[in-house]
Image 1 (tube, one colour):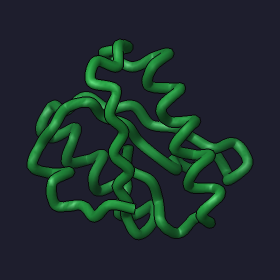
Image 2: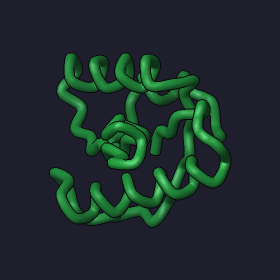
Image 3: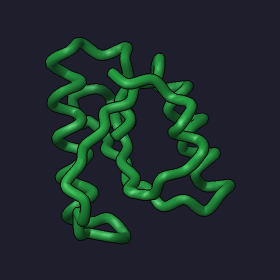
Length: 92
């Protein structure tokens, strides 16, 4: 999971949960095979959008969550595909 760090700690936790639920309900691979969660952080919406663009350019499937209470902004994304893009991100 990749979560925006410009959100409060409690918002980060809630948005990560929403994103995981969205991924399991509607993602391309709805099975969670390894039962491991890794929480990664990006600075803000701009940086999260850059990650999404890189995923799209490299055909990496992901699920995003839009928070209605935050102007429908994307607050977190989930992928279950290990890749070099996420290897460069820091743990929360």
